[in-house]
Structures are given as structure tokens and as C-alpha cells.
Amino acid sequence: MSMLSTEQAPGGLAFATPADWFPLRVPRERADADVLTGQILAARPDLPPDAVARMARSLVAACASLDVLCAYTTALEVPGGPLPATVVASVYPTEGLDVERFAERMAGGGQLVCFNLPAGRTARIEQLREQPIPGRDDRLVSLVVQYVTQIPGTGDAVVLTFSTPALGLGRELQQLFHQMACTLRFEPAEDRQ
Image 1 (cartoon, rainbow, N blue to C red):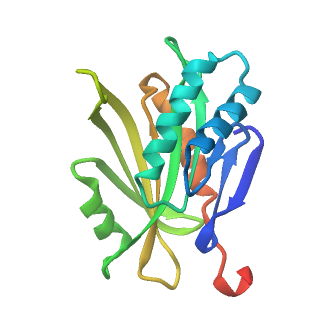
Image 2: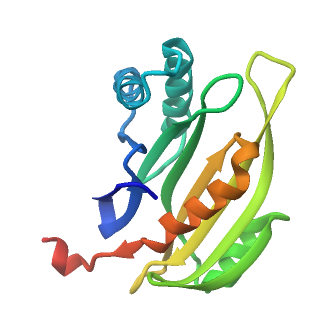
Image 3: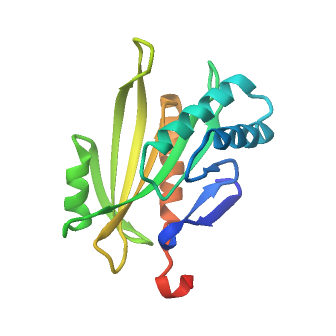
């Protein structure tokens, strides 16, 4: 990973992102897409501005429909134009289940592996997801990798959901996603005051 930026999200959650990943602000508005477009083009002036703007608007719209703590994105240079990679952090009640059982419910046929990370017991779910493209007959296939970790002292789990349609970069991005998940940490409430 190149330079890292670690930002604190609500609830004491923190994880590192590469320097060319940009936060998607919550709440999201049309102006957020414009800010994101400017950030991406400042870092990657070689990308086509119209394509980056479309990509940023669609990412912001997608994040607005989710109840998330924070989200980050980057633009990947691939043949045919830039494609996004995103990470979305969200919190879910585990309903008394341990991480493995909770992740099994989420997996829906995805490949599930459990292991320990510095933040605690973690489950990783990997799968390809297909979704329709609005206004077209085409479908978009994305690599989705989710890391599920229990938040200490709570009945909740944080889920880091990494996603990208840049399937040709899958192996490289799986490694990057894992490196980012390894930096996950929770700051106790008393330390946040």
C-alpha cells in the first residue's frame, strides 16, 4: 500500500486507506459527487472527466441508499475507462450470534473463511455479485469481499464491504482489501470523549 490515511468513523471505528482512496461523506448530496469528482481528477488528471463524474454520481447515489458509518472510493484505471473500488463500513446487530454464525447467515453461498485479525475474530466472505444496470439490458458483475468483526463489548458486528467491477484486478485488490481490513481497530468510548 502507498501512503495510508487513517480516519476515525462514528462509533470509534477506524481503519487505514491508501492515499488515493477518498471519503464519501455521509449524508450524501449531489454536491458530494462534485467534490469527489474533483478529488479523483486532482489525483488522477489522466482520467476522462465525464466518466469520473458519472462514476462519482453513481457511487454517491448507492451510498445514499445504505445506512453506513463511512465509505471510501478510488478510481481504477482499466481499459474502457475508470472503474470504482469501494469500501463501506456498516454496523449490524448480531442477535447473540458469534462472528462465524453471523457471517454464515450473511454469506448466501459466498466463500466463508474465519481467522483472527488484530481487531479480533473475523470472518471473510468472498463472492461475485451480479446486478442489473439501470436503463440497460446489461448486468454488472462485481467482486464483493466482506470482513465481519465483533465490536468489543457490544452485541454488534462491523462489516467492511469491499466491492469493485474491475474483475481483472481481482487478486491484487483482494490483497489490498485484506491489508486494509488488518488495520481495523475500535477506540473505547471513554477514549473518544
